Length: 423
Image 1 (spheres, rainbow, N blue to C red):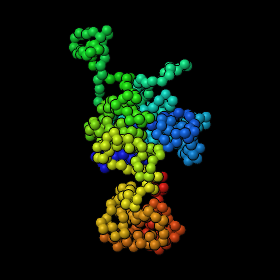
Image 2: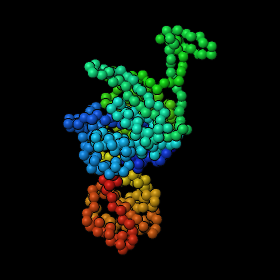
Image 3: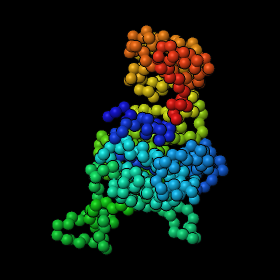
Image 4: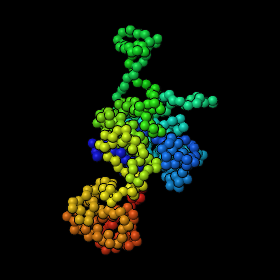
């Protein structure tokens, strides 16, 4: 399996799916994204680990429209553009999901499947998004997950006690392992039909039938042994059913919104490889893991210690010390650190020498890298391109030296910061 397996990524799954996950490498995707609430958050829960902070209300829709309006006009289907005129906040949520589902399709193998978990507020529209991306012919099931939970009895509608999970395949040849479930006989008595196997438990007599798309699985309640306090935690039994049905041992399972890690923990128990991504931006002290990943470590310390943790979060990257930052840059560009480095901190697979700095880079550093690259025993000659990555930035003299070298020596000089890398 590729190096990306058994890896946690901290960052926006849109970026990670595009930058880090190879095309057609994943066998199964389960995603439980933030639900659209339609509320305007007051900031009460901003930075906290609370159910309302885990939902998408898009009070920042102005920012969305300032950056995505042209893309939506060009790429969104006509029905979504129509929704945007009347319900711009909701349309921004649907486009947010459409972008991430499109990238999910790219990384899914031809025999792969995807399960999208949603609720009543957006499920009917999200199915239209899934039809647009995966094709309505690749829709397999609408799974209804029913659960019991507390709460006051509503006066004007039935209690809402189910979620919807849309199951789509990448193609007709998708992996599916049929599962059986108990079907109790009428009056719980034996039928004794010829050729029909019957069984008995403490409830009564039953037969085994193909599993239906209506699942009654207890949610993670207050007294559950699984409970970790994560607002959107899903029961392991739910994930186990999905992973067993649509993957085999040794396959790769991806959760782009992994939260407290139930998907990857169950995948690991079932001998699957896995990738977990989460954008968790709750408040934390400098150098601490984001809350979601701390919870995963506390749930399964051995799994976490055996995995890779990769940051695609700008704030986290800017907090790194020089050694951490250099390692991060080399990992980002899949570069190898030469030994001895002799002024070159990494060399990309394409042969581009990299120098990494945590401080403001000026004229001298640019000149030195070009000289070091020319005389380094492991660089490809003649030097055609060099790269300088600065955690802090570049002054005007650095940009002047870049111009001089590119003009006089025809060596491309790339100056880049983490902000630009993570766009």
